[in-house]
Image 1 (cartoon, rainbow, N blue to C red):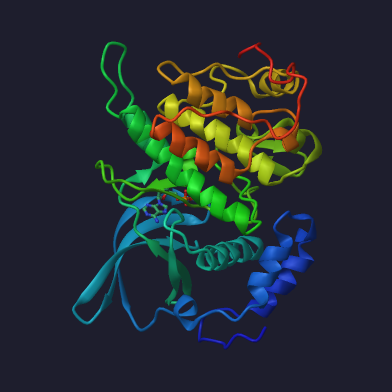
Image 2: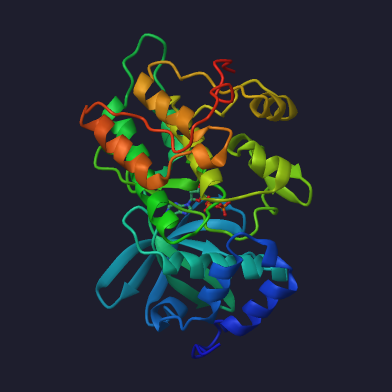
Length: 344
Ligand code: ADP
């Protein structure tokens, strides 16, 4: 790697070697990761040691260990940040994943993608410093905002659409950069605040998802997959593409409009996979506008080629928000029975 070495921060070259050694050539983003690791990284990303870092409280726990809140301080100026600390005793594979996530995030600059401020080295430990998303994750926020039967929802349709649009913008940016996320879900979206000025941003750019211990992920072959968010071609044939991200985005839309329910509620995983592969789809959440459900169904077309692009999805959402009639266009002609009226 041409990048200059900064004390304590690992160089890209060994990472690149690891990427090859771990046979990640099969990974859909392999070429992008490789490109990222061979680029010269700005010193800002590689070293934040010009700043003091004060850790204040625990925010949550993630795949790598604790996520903490902190302050990045320089003189009298400080910035609130979130810090992911790689737990000591982690494996080489986890360490690589941690760094690849940091480098990937720092490559993307978009208002709806959580910003990586850099890597901080403290007492030999590696810390990934990100912008603080004080509203926490979208899944929890939706559950907290869930209306009871006779209540008006705490969030209006426009607020729900605004959240959906924020993430769609991030996905459209990733689509333009040919980056396949593979784990679009409300648990992986974070909010700047809970107040109405909230902005939702996409987080979680990890390389390997097989270290996650969570009910949302099921063992499929060698890896753990978030099967409820995936189309049949992903869990049956291991195919991931921007179009499988579009399917997952449709599930995220369903999560948003159901106020944070788990997809295919009360259905076992195997049953769900068989039914979905047979053409069944989730029913619309209650109170979900028909036009929004139409967009979900479009994302869940069996044939990946028939699913819309994120660019098109952004256009649909903006029109829906403005109350403009939308003419939903299928990119391919499909026989219809794959969408099915057979709702789950
Ligand atoms: P994982 O590595 O398991 O994907 P996450 O990135 O989802 O871990 O982090 C776990 C939790 O930590 C999140 O659900 C969220 O509550 C909190 N968290 C993560 N990143 C941030 C951030 N930038 N700002 C605020 N909280 C965060």
